[in-house]
Length: 583
Image (cartoon, rainbow, N blue to C red; front, side, top):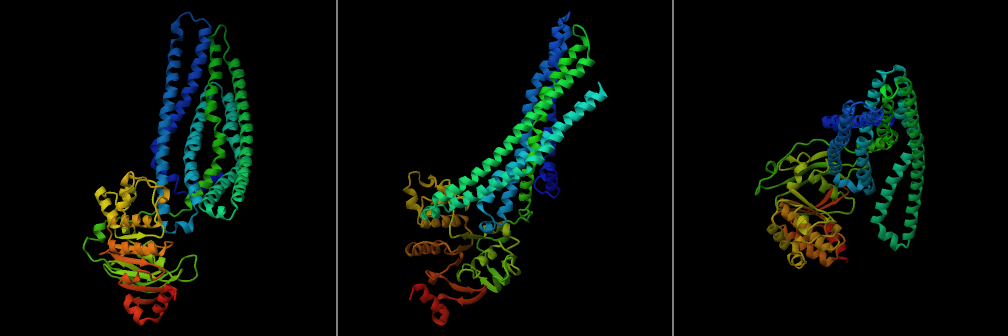
């Protein structure tokens, strides 16, 4: 319990939503209290009614009031329960919706470095475990504890009106159930639950990592080794689960025994206090005894709720370690770009160094990418080409220097830079939806006619028309039904629908055969005619179609000129051409 309070002390994920939806929270707690109150009152009036009716009343009107109350509480209990569930789950769903949006924005902020900074299994753990745990934090811990506490205070005060000493006895017994037993549970199985959570997350990481690389396991002939290793870890997790379940069964039995003892104590007290012949005061004995049983549902779950706080604290800590989402100034496309205006990208004395590196990636780079110019950027791996591409979009901020687009710093306009600069990566992703929807990722308002037009521009119209359902054909997950060249053409079609003036091609033909690569490059440059094209590449195939060629080495610009000029005057460029052609 202490751990959860420490985690909430500096929390920015849970507390804000408790304040944001505080009215629904209070309403859910009040409805929860009234639900259990009506449950207890139903049994109380039913017990009195049974006893009073058994004493043979002289007139039916003498038991009319308890009959009406029994009906009223009997109807009110399920109705209030239903409304309470609607209210509490509405509150929780609003909260988890906001949490998932915040998680997305937090990760999207560093989407460029997603694969470098996060493992897929960790993110699955965040989505499936941590967000779910925070949802349960409210439904299974906060709500039940607050409702039980309000019932506890009400019961002690109500009994105090009859007998102060008995109210203190009941306060002590209920204190054991709602405080002492949960605290022992936390101490007893807290460590095991942390092992359970860590084991689950590790299985997420291991499974996703190895599923992605399953072909390597199969080709190496060690597929059975992976299965055996995974099953062994799963067996260890089952042992931890069994240990927790064993303790929970024992604890639940003890709680039930405690409630049985409370009923006995209550019977002894009421038998001594409410004495009468042929009914009278004795009619209250059954009323007090029976009203205990509905309260078991309110107090018994508290031990489970308390033990789960260890897991919730871990989830809160993991989420709070993510980058904080900051509100950014909103830019409109009209503020940046008007169709027909020249767009110039300027790199001014840019230095860049990653936090984890001791050396600068880029060192005093000065460049200008002029409107409608086609520029190829070459360089060996690690020379800074891809880093430069990220700087041009404002996804990275220079250590020093500045990158501006028509005198506007790209870091400042990054939230809407996608309206001006499009990017095609090495492995474009196709989603498990229709071809039409995959294309509309570039422009959600594009018409079907626009989509057919761009398919024709990229040379895929005939292929799509030949499919059974045409443009409404479902795409397999990751687009596996299409070849590498077709996936790249569909990605190009997205960019054409996006209709941005600047396009960055980040080594889009890596892994393709030379014939397909050459055909794709011809398609790219034809379709992108009239746009600024910045092409990051590792060799010289197709470079003759560029207006300029840049060569970056160790973060420094070594060559800058037209392909023809460099081929005639630069010995280094000539050597690169010979190396690329293999002679």
